[in-house]
Length: 347
Image 1 (spheres, rainbow, N blue to C red):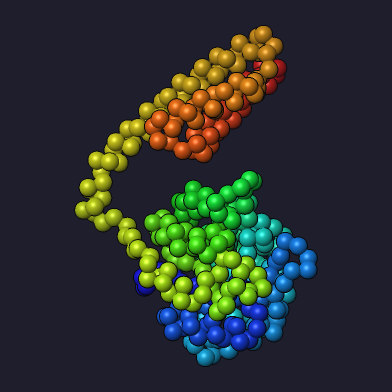
Image 2: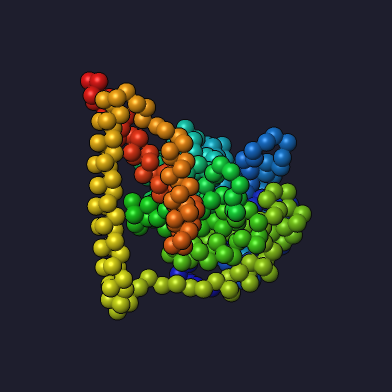
Protein backbone atom coordinates (compact mmCIF):
# COMPACT_ATOMS: atom_id res chain seq x y z
CA UNK A 1 0.00 0.00 0.00
CA UNK A 2 1.31 3.43 -0.92
CA UNK A 3 1.60 5.41 2.36
CA UNK A 4 1.11 8.68 0.46
CA UNK A 5 -2.41 7.65 -0.60
CA UNK A 6 -5.46 8.02 1.62
CA UNK A 7 -7.43 4.77 1.62
CA UNK A 8 -10.98 4.79 3.01
CA UNK A 9 -12.98 1.56 2.99
CA UNK A 10 -16.07 -0.03 4.47
CA UNK A 11 -19.61 -1.09 3.57
CA UNK A 12 -22.04 0.97 1.55
CA UNK A 13 -24.47 0.75 4.48
CA UNK A 14 -24.17 -0.11 8.13
CA UNK A 15 -26.74 -2.92 8.33
CA UNK A 16 -26.04 -4.83 11.55
CA UNK A 17 -23.56 -4.49 14.35
CA UNK A 18 -22.00 -7.83 13.43
CA UNK A 19 -21.61 -6.89 9.77
CA UNK A 20 -19.97 -3.57 10.67
CA UNK A 21 -17.56 -5.04 13.22
CA UNK A 22 -16.55 -8.04 11.09
CA UNK A 23 -15.79 -5.80 8.12
CA UNK A 24 -13.94 -3.29 10.28
CA UNK A 25 -11.74 -5.92 11.91
CA UNK A 26 -10.69 -7.29 8.52
CA UNK A 27 -9.87 -3.82 7.24
CA UNK A 28 -7.95 -2.87 10.37
CA UNK A 29 -5.85 -6.03 9.99
CA UNK A 30 -5.10 -4.93 6.41
CA UNK A 31 -3.77 -1.60 7.70
CA UNK A 32 -6.69 0.66 6.73
CA UNK A 33 -6.94 3.69 8.99
CA UNK A 34 -10.31 5.20 7.98
CA UNK A 35 -13.55 3.21 8.02
CA UNK A 36 -16.63 4.31 6.04
CA UNK A 37 -20.25 3.24 6.40
CA UNK A 38 -23.52 4.87 5.39
CA UNK A 39 -25.92 5.44 8.28
CA UNK A 40 -28.55 7.30 6.27
CA UNK A 41 -28.92 6.22 2.65
CA UNK A 42 -30.65 8.46 0.07
CA UNK A 43 -32.35 6.05 -2.34
CA UNK A 44 -33.94 6.67 -5.70
CA UNK A 45 -37.24 4.97 -4.88
CA UNK A 46 -39.21 4.62 -1.63
CA UNK A 47 -39.39 1.21 0.00
CA UNK A 48 -35.69 0.46 -0.43
CA UNK A 49 -33.34 0.17 2.55
CA UNK A 50 -32.61 3.76 3.57
CA UNK A 51 -30.06 3.08 6.27
CA UNK A 52 -30.19 1.88 9.85
CA UNK A 53 -30.22 5.44 11.18
CA UNK A 54 -28.81 6.76 14.44
CA UNK A 55 -28.29 3.33 16.15
CA UNK A 56 -25.54 2.70 13.60
CA UNK A 57 -23.56 5.66 14.91
CA UNK A 58 -22.85 3.67 18.07
CA UNK A 59 -21.47 0.86 15.94
CA UNK A 60 -19.07 3.31 14.32
CA UNK A 61 -17.93 4.47 17.74
CA UNK A 62 -17.31 0.84 18.67
CA UNK A 63 -15.23 0.43 15.49
CA UNK A 64 -13.04 3.35 16.48
CA UNK A 65 -12.69 2.15 20.08
CA UNK A 66 -11.77 -1.43 19.13
CA UNK A 67 -9.64 -0.89 16.01
CA UNK A 68 -8.29 2.64 16.35
CA UNK A 69 -9.56 3.52 12.88
CA UNK A 70 -11.16 6.89 12.31
CA UNK A 71 -14.76 6.65 11.10
CA UNK A 72 -16.76 8.58 8.52
CA UNK A 73 -20.37 8.67 7.37
CA UNK A 74 -22.60 10.62 4.98
CA UNK A 75 -24.80 13.51 6.08
CA UNK A 76 -27.59 15.07 4.03
CA UNK A 77 -29.20 17.60 6.41
CA UNK A 78 -28.74 19.40 9.71
CA UNK A 79 -30.30 16.57 11.75
CA UNK A 80 -27.71 14.15 10.39
CA UNK A 81 -24.94 16.60 11.22
CA UNK A 82 -26.19 17.08 14.77
CA UNK A 83 -26.40 13.33 15.38
CA UNK A 84 -22.98 12.65 13.82
CA UNK A 85 -21.28 15.36 15.85
CA UNK A 86 -22.94 14.11 19.03
CA UNK A 87 -21.59 10.62 18.29
CA UNK A 88 -18.12 12.13 17.71
CA UNK A 89 -17.79 10.86 14.14
CA UNK A 90 -14.34 11.83 12.90
CA UNK A 91 -15.06 12.79 9.28
CA UNK A 92 -18.24 13.58 7.34
CA UNK A 93 -19.00 13.30 3.67
CA UNK A 94 -21.66 14.89 1.49
CA UNK A 95 -23.15 12.61 -1.15
CA UNK A 96 -23.69 13.21 -4.86
CA UNK A 97 -27.42 13.88 -4.62
CA UNK A 98 -26.90 16.39 -1.80
CA UNK A 99 -24.05 18.20 -3.56
CA UNK A 100 -26.47 18.90 -6.41
CA UNK A 101 -28.81 20.77 -4.01
CA UNK A 102 -27.40 24.15 -2.89
CA UNK A 103 -30.13 24.54 -0.25
CA UNK A 104 -29.14 21.24 1.39
CA UNK A 105 -25.43 22.05 1.22
CA UNK A 106 -26.04 25.45 2.81
CA UNK A 107 -28.07 23.83 5.58
CA UNK A 108 -25.17 21.46 6.30
CA UNK A 109 -22.66 24.32 6.14
CA UNK A 110 -24.67 26.36 8.62
CA UNK A 111 -24.86 23.35 10.96
CA UNK A 112 -21.07 22.96 10.79
CA UNK A 113 -20.24 26.64 11.24
CA UNK A 114 -17.32 26.98 13.61
CA UNK A 115 -16.74 23.22 13.69
CA UNK A 116 -13.29 21.84 12.85
CA UNK A 117 -14.44 18.44 11.54
CA UNK A 118 -13.03 17.40 8.13
CA UNK A 119 -15.59 17.18 5.31
CA UNK A 120 -15.43 15.30 2.02
CA UNK A 121 -17.61 16.40 -0.89
CA UNK A 122 -18.66 14.00 -3.64
CA UNK A 123 -19.21 15.36 -7.11
CA UNK A 124 -22.84 16.09 -7.99
CA UNK A 125 -24.60 13.28 -9.80
CA UNK A 126 -24.84 15.45 -12.93
CA UNK A 127 -21.65 16.64 -14.68
CA UNK A 128 -21.61 20.20 -13.35
CA UNK A 129 -18.32 21.39 -11.89
CA UNK A 130 -19.88 24.65 -10.72
CA UNK A 131 -22.15 22.72 -8.33
CA UNK A 132 -19.11 20.80 -7.06
CA UNK A 133 -16.97 23.86 -6.43
CA UNK A 134 -19.98 25.78 -5.14
CA UNK A 135 -20.61 23.16 -2.46
CA UNK A 136 -16.99 23.35 -1.34
CA UNK A 137 -17.10 27.14 -1.26
CA UNK A 138 -20.26 27.11 0.91
CA UNK A 139 -18.44 24.95 3.44
CA UNK A 140 -15.34 27.14 3.27
CA UNK A 141 -17.50 30.18 3.98
CA UNK A 142 -18.79 28.40 7.09
CA UNK A 143 -15.22 28.06 8.39
CA UNK A 144 -14.48 24.46 7.39
CA UNK A 145 -10.79 24.20 6.59
CA UNK A 146 -10.04 20.49 6.12
CA UNK A 147 -11.47 19.19 2.87
CA UNK A 148 -11.29 16.46 0.30
CA UNK A 149 -13.26 15.93 -2.89
CA UNK A 150 -14.51 12.50 -3.94
CA UNK A 151 -14.81 11.72 -7.63
CA UNK A 152 -17.53 9.08 -8.00
CA UNK A 153 -18.52 9.52 -11.64
CA UNK A 154 -21.46 11.23 -13.33
CA UNK A 155 -24.89 10.20 -14.52
CA UNK A 156 -25.23 10.30 -18.30
CA UNK A 157 -27.95 9.39 -20.75
CA UNK A 158 -27.82 6.06 -22.57
CA UNK A 159 -26.13 2.73 -22.00
CA UNK A 160 -22.64 2.99 -20.53
CA UNK A 161 -19.84 0.60 -19.62
CA UNK A 162 -19.84 1.97 -16.08
CA UNK A 163 -22.65 2.83 -13.72
CA UNK A 164 -21.46 6.43 -13.63
CA UNK A 165 -19.17 7.78 -16.33
CA UNK A 166 -15.74 8.86 -15.01
CA UNK A 167 -15.56 12.02 -17.18
CA UNK A 168 -11.98 12.52 -16.02
CA UNK A 169 -11.88 16.01 -17.53
CA UNK A 170 -14.07 17.29 -14.68
CA UNK A 171 -11.79 16.29 -11.74
CA UNK A 172 -8.87 17.50 -13.86
CA UNK A 173 -10.55 20.91 -14.06
CA UNK A 174 -11.28 20.78 -10.32
CA UNK A 175 -7.56 20.14 -9.71
CA UNK A 176 -6.70 23.14 -11.87
CA UNK A 177 -9.07 25.40 -9.95
CA UNK A 178 -8.23 24.07 -6.47
CA UNK A 179 -4.67 22.67 -6.69
CA UNK A 180 -4.30 22.11 -2.93
CA UNK A 181 -7.57 20.15 -2.61
CA UNK A 182 -7.08 16.36 -2.16
CA UNK A 183 -9.17 14.37 -4.64
CA UNK A 184 -10.09 10.76 -3.86
CA UNK A 185 -11.66 8.32 -6.32
CA UNK A 186 -14.73 6.19 -5.57
CA UNK A 187 -14.34 3.34 -8.11
CA UNK A 188 -17.18 1.39 -6.48
CA UNK A 189 -19.97 3.81 -7.43
CA UNK A 190 -18.24 4.69 -10.66
CA UNK A 191 -18.03 1.08 -11.82
CA UNK A 192 -21.26 -0.31 -10.42
CA UNK A 193 -19.83 -3.84 -10.59
CA UNK A 194 -16.97 -5.26 -8.58
CA UNK A 195 -15.05 -6.30 -11.72
CA UNK A 196 -14.74 -2.63 -12.67
CA UNK A 197 -13.31 -1.47 -9.34
CA UNK A 198 -9.66 -2.42 -9.96
CA UNK A 199 -9.29 -0.92 -13.45
CA UNK A 200 -10.97 2.30 -12.35
CA UNK A 201 -8.84 2.50 -9.22
CA UNK A 202 -5.77 1.98 -11.39
CA UNK A 203 -6.90 4.67 -13.80
CA UNK A 204 -7.38 7.08 -10.90
CA UNK A 205 -3.81 6.44 -9.74
CA UNK A 206 -2.57 7.21 -13.23
CA UNK A 207 -4.58 10.45 -13.00
CA UNK A 208 -2.68 11.22 -9.76
CA UNK A 209 -5.64 10.79 -7.40
CA UNK A 210 -4.78 11.29 -3.74
CA UNK A 211 -6.50 8.12 -2.59
CA UNK A 212 -9.44 5.75 -2.82
CA UNK A 213 -12.93 5.54 -1.32
CA UNK A 214 -13.98 1.90 -1.72
CA UNK A 215 -17.01 -0.11 -0.65
CA UNK A 216 -16.06 -3.31 1.22
CA UNK A 217 -18.54 -5.70 2.85
CA UNK A 218 -17.93 -8.93 4.77
CA UNK A 219 -20.69 -10.60 2.71
CA UNK A 220 -21.48 -8.35 -0.28
CA UNK A 221 -23.90 -10.74 -1.98
CA UNK A 222 -26.23 -10.29 1.01
CA UNK A 223 -25.79 -6.51 1.21
CA UNK A 224 -28.96 -4.42 1.53
CA UNK A 225 -27.64 -1.79 -0.87
CA UNK A 226 -25.26 -1.79 -3.85
CA UNK A 227 -24.37 -5.46 -3.48
CA UNK A 228 -22.91 -5.79 -7.00
CA UNK A 229 -20.21 -3.16 -6.51
CA UNK A 230 -18.93 -4.09 -3.05
CA UNK A 231 -15.77 -6.13 -2.53
CA UNK A 232 -15.03 -8.71 0.14
CA UNK A 233 -12.11 -7.79 2.42
CA UNK A 234 -9.94 -10.39 0.63
CA UNK A 235 -10.82 -8.91 -2.76
CA UNK A 236 -9.98 -5.46 -1.44
CA UNK A 237 -6.59 -6.55 -0.13
CA UNK A 238 -5.82 -8.13 -3.52
CA UNK A 239 -6.83 -4.87 -5.21
CA UNK A 240 -4.36 -2.90 -3.10
CA UNK A 241 -1.62 -5.41 -3.88
CA UNK A 242 -2.28 -5.22 -7.62
CA UNK A 243 -2.38 -1.44 -7.94
CA UNK A 244 0.62 -0.02 -9.73
CA UNK A 245 1.98 3.15 -8.20
CA UNK A 246 2.71 6.13 -10.44
CA UNK A 247 4.79 9.17 -9.63
CA UNK A 248 4.85 12.75 -10.78
CA UNK A 249 7.81 13.25 -13.16
CA UNK A 250 10.94 14.64 -11.49
CA UNK A 251 13.17 17.27 -13.10
CA UNK A 252 15.16 14.73 -15.14
CA UNK A 253 12.03 12.99 -16.41
CA UNK A 254 10.45 16.35 -17.18
CA UNK A 255 13.49 17.11 -19.34
CA UNK A 256 13.03 13.82 -21.18
CA UNK A 257 9.39 14.70 -21.81
CA UNK A 258 10.17 18.20 -23.10
CA UNK A 259 10.54 17.10 -26.71
CA UNK A 260 7.18 15.36 -26.70
CA UNK A 261 5.52 18.32 -25.04
CA UNK A 262 6.97 20.78 -27.54
CA UNK A 263 5.56 18.69 -30.38
CA UNK A 264 2.14 18.60 -28.70
CA UNK A 265 2.25 22.37 -28.12
CA UNK A 266 2.96 22.86 -31.81
CA UNK A 267 0.00 20.66 -32.77
CA UNK A 268 -2.24 22.55 -30.35
CA UNK A 269 -1.28 25.89 -31.89
CA UNK A 270 -2.09 24.52 -35.34
CA UNK A 271 -5.46 23.26 -34.09
CA UNK A 272 -6.33 26.72 -32.71
CA UNK A 273 -5.31 28.38 -35.99
CA UNK A 274 -7.40 25.91 -38.02
CA UNK A 275 -10.42 26.38 -35.73
CA UNK A 276 -10.11 30.15 -36.09
CA UNK A 277 -10.06 29.81 -39.89
CA UNK A 278 -13.09 27.51 -39.72
CA UNK A 279 -15.03 30.03 -37.64
CA UNK A 280 -14.16 32.79 -40.11
CA UNK A 281 -15.82 30.68 -42.81
CA UNK A 282 -18.81 30.16 -40.50
CA UNK A 283 -19.19 33.93 -40.24
CA UNK A 284 -19.21 34.19 -44.05
CA UNK A 285 -21.83 31.43 -44.23
CA UNK A 286 -23.88 33.23 -41.60
CA UNK A 287 -23.87 36.44 -43.65
CA UNK A 288 -24.97 34.53 -46.74
CA UNK A 289 -27.79 32.69 -44.91
CA UNK A 290 -28.98 35.91 -43.35
CA UNK A 291 -29.01 37.70 -46.69
CA UNK A 292 -31.02 34.89 -48.32
CA UNK A 293 -33.27 34.12 -45.32
CA UNK A 294 -31.94 30.58 -44.87
CA UNK A 295 -32.21 28.59 -41.64
CA UNK A 296 -29.12 28.31 -39.47
CA UNK A 297 -29.44 24.59 -38.81
CA UNK A 298 -29.67 21.85 -41.43
CA UNK A 299 -29.85 18.58 -39.49
CA UNK A 300 -29.22 16.29 -42.46
CA UNK A 301 -26.06 18.19 -43.34
CA UNK A 302 -24.83 17.91 -39.73
CA UNK A 303 -25.53 14.17 -39.57
CA UNK A 304 -23.66 13.62 -42.85
CA UNK A 305 -20.68 15.59 -41.52
CA UNK A 306 -20.50 13.62 -38.27
CA UNK A 307 -20.86 10.24 -39.97
CA UNK A 308 -18.17 11.08 -42.51
CA UNK A 309 -15.81 12.35 -39.82
CA UNK A 310 -16.36 9.23 -37.71
CA UNK A 311 -15.32 7.10 -40.70
CA UNK A 312 -12.33 9.36 -41.35
CA UNK A 313 -11.34 9.27 -37.68
CA UNK A 314 -11.32 5.48 -37.64
CA UNK A 315 -8.63 5.50 -40.31
CA UNK A 316 -6.39 7.31 -37.83
CA UNK A 317 -7.35 5.31 -34.75
CA UNK A 318 -9.70 7.94 -33.26
CA UNK A 319 -12.69 6.64 -31.30
CA UNK A 320 -16.23 7.37 -32.40
CA UNK A 321 -17.10 9.05 -29.09
CA UNK A 322 -14.09 11.34 -29.30
CA UNK A 323 -14.93 12.46 -32.83
CA UNK A 324 -18.62 12.95 -32.00
CA UNK A 325 -17.86 14.94 -28.84
CA UNK A 326 -15.16 17.08 -30.47
CA UNK A 327 -17.16 18.03 -33.53
CA UNK A 328 -20.32 18.33 -31.48
CA UNK A 329 -18.65 21.18 -29.58
CA UNK A 330 -17.35 22.72 -32.80
CA UNK A 331 -20.82 22.54 -34.35
CA UNK A 332 -22.44 24.09 -31.26
CA UNK A 333 -19.99 27.00 -31.39
CA UNK A 334 -20.69 27.41 -35.13
CA UNK A 335 -24.45 27.56 -34.54
CA UNK A 336 -23.99 30.03 -31.68
CA UNK A 337 -21.87 32.28 -33.90
CA UNK A 338 -24.54 32.27 -36.59
CA UNK A 339 -27.35 33.00 -34.13
CA UNK A 340 -25.34 35.82 -32.58
CA UNK A 341 -24.71 37.34 -36.00
CA UNK A 342 -28.42 37.21 -36.84
CA UNK A 343 -29.38 38.86 -33.57
CA UNK A 344 -26.76 41.59 -33.98
CA UNK A 345 -27.96 42.21 -37.53
CA UNK A 346 -31.57 42.63 -36.34
CA UNK A 347 -30.44 45.09 -33.70
